[in-house]
Structures are given as C-alpha cells and as structure tokens.
Amino acid sequence: MKIGILGTGIVGKTLAAKFIELGHEVMIGTRNVSETLAKTEKDMMGSPPFKEWHSKNPKIQLSTFADAAQFGEMIFLATHGVATIAAIDLAGKNNFKGKIIIDTTNPLDFSQGMPPKFSATFGNSLGEKIQKHIPEAKVVKAFNTVNAFVMVSPKREEGDPDLFIAGNDEAAKSIFKSLAEQMGWKRIIDSSDISNSYWLEALTMFWVNYGFINNNWTHAFKLLIK
Amino acid sequence: MKIGILGTGIVGKTLAAKFIELGHEVMIGTRNVSETLAKTEKDMMGSPPFKEWHSKNPKIQLSTFADAAQFGEMIFLATHGVATIAAIDLAGKNNFKGKIIIDTTNPLDFSQGMPPKFSATFGNSLGEKIQKHIPEAKVVKAFNTVNAFVMVSPKREEGDPDLFIAGNDEAAKSIFKSLAEQMGWKRIIDSSDISNSYWLEALTMFWVNYGFINNNWTHAFKLLIK
Image (cartoon, rainbow over all chains, first blue to last red; front, side, top):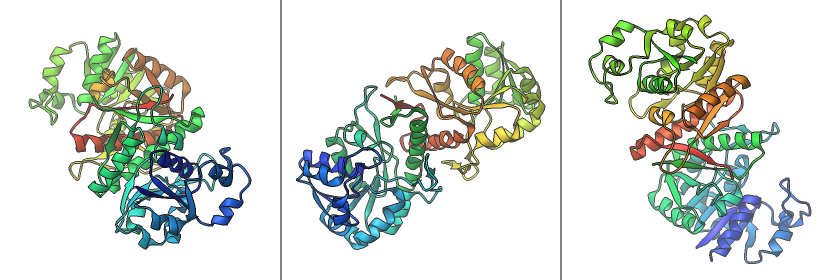
C-alpha cells in the first residue's frame, strides 16, 4: 500500500520505518523540505536530526505535505495537534478526498509549558474537527493513546494493549485494522463513530497525566473484557 | 472501620455486603427509610427490592443519609451522579468534616434516555464539585470506572484491572488504598489531585460507550506500565 505521512517528528519517522519494514511504500510530507533537511540538532526527545535518520532509512521518500498526501492511499496525520488542520490545508484538501486518513494526533496545547493543556471540548474533539474539515475523507482516529514506540511494537511485558479506534467509515476501519494487525496489534476496539474520538483524546490526557507523575511514556491501556 | 454509604442502589448494596464480609461496620443511608423499605419491585437492573436484600444482609444498618454520614469514618458516595450533591446536603455537610469521602459517582445525565450524556466539563468534574462543596472533607475519587460487581471482585479472566484514584489528601488515599487491597485490588494508580477526577470520569464515558456497543458491563481498564 502507498502510505503518506504528514509530520517528520518521532511519530512520523517511527511509523514510516515500520511501514517500510512491512513492505509498504512510504512518503513523508513536511512543510518545507529544505528546512527539514537543514536541521542539525537533535529534537527535544533526543532523536537525531531528520537528515541523519533519513540516511539510514533511504527507502522512505521525503517531500511536501501536498506530495505526501497525493501519494498516499492511506494518509497518517502525525503532526502536533495544534498544527494538524494547517498541515491539511497546506497539503490541499482535495488530496484527501475518498482516502483513509489515520488521525494519530491529540489536542494538546504546549503553549503554556508542561504538562500540556487539553484543548478539545466535548463535541469538538480534534478527530471530529478533522473529519468536518475534510468531509469526503474517511477519518479514523487511532494510535493517539500510545507513544510512537508502542505504536510499532505494541507488546508490553504486562501484556498486549488494545488499540482504540473511532471513525464513521466501516470499510476504512477494516482496512486500517488489517494494517494494525500487521504491526502487531492483537485486538482493536472500535469505539464507533468519529464523535467518540473525544473519549479517545481524553484517554490520552489520562495517559499524559500518568506519564508526568511517573516519568513513564511507554504505558498503554488494555480493556479487560472478560 | 465504620463505613457509611449514601445510596441504596446496586453500588451501595454491593459495597456494603463486601465491607461486612471484610469485618467492617456498615450503615447505608437513604433519603427516606420507610420509602426504601416499602419498595416491592425489582430495580431496572433486576435486583430485588431493598427489604428483601436487607433480610439476607442483616448486619448492615439502614438509616437516613445524615445518620449514615455521621456513623462513617469513611463515607462512600454511591448515589446517581446527578443526586450526589443533594444527598450530601441532606446528610448535613458537617457530618463530612475531616472524614475520608470516596466518590464512586459519575456525572451521567440519564434525563434524555440511553446512552447517558456526560454532564461534566474540564475543571468542573463531579469529583471537584464535591470537594469544593465539602472543602473540609478528604474526597477521593475511586471505583467510578467499573461496575459494582467488579468493585468487590476485581479479578477478570484477562487479568487484574487497575484501580484509578484521585484526591488531594495523601493520608486519605493511603487509607482507602488499604481497604481496596483488602477487596482484592492488586494495583492502585494514583492520578494525583482531585482536579484529575475529570479524566477518571471521562474514562467512564469510554467505558459506557464500550458497554452500549458491546452489551458488556464487567469490563475494566488495566494500564500496561512495563
């Protein structure tokens, strides 16, 4: 499958490498390609600059948001939450039409420092905002409740976490589900339509809160069903 | 320990029976004792009327909200969420002073039918409202993310769920934690101060949503930490 990824941060890079490993074609999109390649410093999480990482992952194509969106049959949104709508606009709304869009982002506001504030309200979650912004796209909220490393390597010492998703299009969720299973996710729990992305985003705040209290960032939820 | 419980529903009854089993003294409080005892019909969940249940659990005392609150060294709030503040007022705010209050309730609005609507907003969760209403009490949000049967018998086939709590008073949380451990909870995850009860209440909405989609009500969260 051709996968476009918007965002060159740790989520975008980690997903891209995994998708290549699984045999997919991947293009990462960024706002400004030359700026992305010109960076020489590690990011705030200690990851190497994009160019250095890219030299070790040569199969991954890098281009503009628009090119990556056009390229992808499935498009992952992997920017900061506050920048997601702008990234879609830069990519060109038309490039999302009819496609499966995986929204991994969270409505986190880092402008007042750490810990981030939650910037969604009920009925106005980021997943819903995105779906309304590109109504002809099939938005699936997913992966927003775990960090990048867990996304591509979900198994924990304590068990297999659940992947929580929400979205209006059943076929899109089903296709995404197959990909997630390829990535090692054992169980995908469908929270129904995109309006429920509010609860998935709220779960993230619980997750963030736990992270700051315990300085742990690889935790993940499991719903004990039986 | 002397435990007061406000609420004669399935949560109040199930907790009361468990606390008696563990050797505690329990008084359940209700708005109107004679009305509670006069009921002859099963409730909407199919539980027998209070009097019938009470005849099988004779060690549990039944009295007014005020008596139960005065009686308890630890007081469980186990009414419907919309009725909790009124129950506290009927019990008399003075009866909560300096005591440990376990808020098991959720800001669910059933007035528009099923599924219930979420009636809290960020910064205005039910746990916070209660703490502000009785500022000299030590409110601990707990047990709100599972149903009554899981509260008293947490182990699931799929593993041990985590108990999520929030509250401002460390000593109160520590005393509650010991009680929860007596009840079979293996791990209690402290989400810090009472402002975080919003995220615990939001977790419940995820839980409710799952319940309605899957007609399952004994599910419980586990946070895979390692």
